[in-house]
Length: 203
Length: 203
Image (cartoon, rainbow over all chains, first blue to last red; front, side):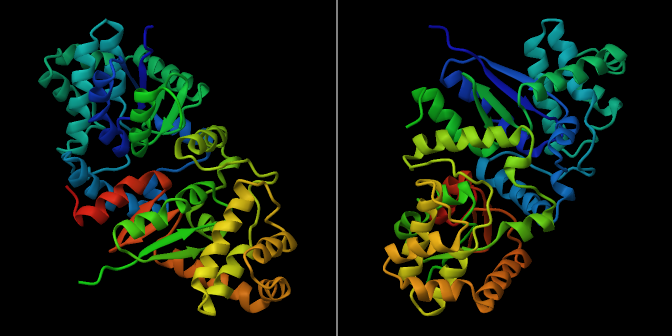
């Protein structure tokens, strides 16, 4: 029997998505599952659920800031609070789909990981197209082609449609993992994802 | 060195609080920590954070309903969707503090577990004082005294103050676990709580 893929929905501006991104490929490899990376914008999803970014929420904001610090130590993942957070990280997901649509999946994944690291570990201004193009170039992607692509109306439209499809299918947060029709919201559900991959049943 | 207690903040109408309540005492016993049960009302906390009950949130509501079903199988905890949810579960937390303030901590904990089970496993109408008094009586508590206590203005005031103190200290959800100054929000953080209790450090 062919095992279905793990769909990994995430937003490039989401710390919990960043932490999950460090673990998801190894999890897929361990259980022989393809991992489909699916970046989307949380903004429209938050509009649907009436949610606000963590930082704007009293009590939850300070909790999360402290939580990311300790998660870094807990998981061994480099972490540095970005200078601007939250920020609209648009060029990265557009660039991701532009690469993927050309069949350059490996390059798209390499770029996605570099973009996450640039924002959350190296405090680089990933809300800027130029900086994001630098990260792309460091991944061996043509800088000028990248800029042309991510500023095109096609790339904008492509990302909007991916996001709407995600919301329509029930995705409302980042990270959001779907496998065998089971949905898992949040980094802290990775142990439950692992249990599902191992047993294929609950209890 | 004396090890500090585990503060277990929960709301009696919270499914994730119910699931955490099944595990928290064993966790405390395993690491020789006292567990302080601290019921509070989520309503005022939600007002502070601008949150709404899960059921009213598009996408998240249906996700949670399915999640509770599978968590029941995953954790081996009985579960039945209450007839009315969310509901204002007031007599249970008021009764809890009334018992605790008399030094009847064991009785308070026994009653808390019975009240949670009545609402989330047996679909009993725990938003009613009379039904909650029945549950208290089943725990060996005087029924008439219980009713008199939980409908008193003192008991109402006591619960309001406990809730405000919780919010003032940073509590914003249920379950919410505090130990050694570390805060953990959500049932899915229990593995991280365990790791902290085991190592006393991150990473």
